Amino acid sequence: LYLLSGIIVFNYFSECTNNALISITGNAPLITKVYVPKIIFPLAKVLSSSVNFFISLIPLFGVVLITGSPINIFTPIIFFNMTMFLIFCVGIGLLLATIMTFFRDTQFLWSIILMVWMYATPVFYPVSIIPLKYLFIYKLNPLYHYITFSRTILVQGVNPSLGAYATIVGIAFASLLVGLFIFKLNEDKLVNYL
Image 1: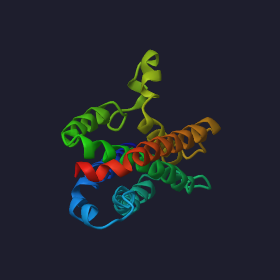
Image 2: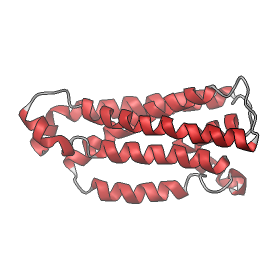
Image 3: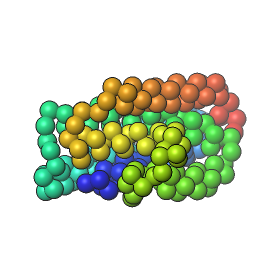
């Protein structure tokens, strides 16, 4: 359950960002011929990835039942975490779609970043093996907080702390605001680079 919860969250992040990355350049023929709000394309990619993500929660809850992990009043909070994570992914997706339009090599660089990011996130290994003096570095990683929040609910069966709530909400909306700002700032220039 510990492993699966980490893999599902990271795979969703990877799918969202990879799809959003090429959402503008991949729809260049349509964007250059017909006026449509360009923000629709990265949003549609992230939301379509969310369908797969929520379907993947079915086997996750199956594992919860099989392993006898606690199911209680805190279990539905997982959907709040997933909603905040969706907002976070929208922000990152908007940012990547903008950068990709100007710099086409971004897709190759992003695949390397994703690989490094996966190993820098406690997906396959327990947080307990991280020395305490380096733990603050791991806490700079947004995915660390979303995965830890999920595991607190699913594996430990307890309600996360108020600090954990504040962190995932803050990261989600900070990402969204930055992504929206960068996208809106460059939206009118994107057509010139398609």
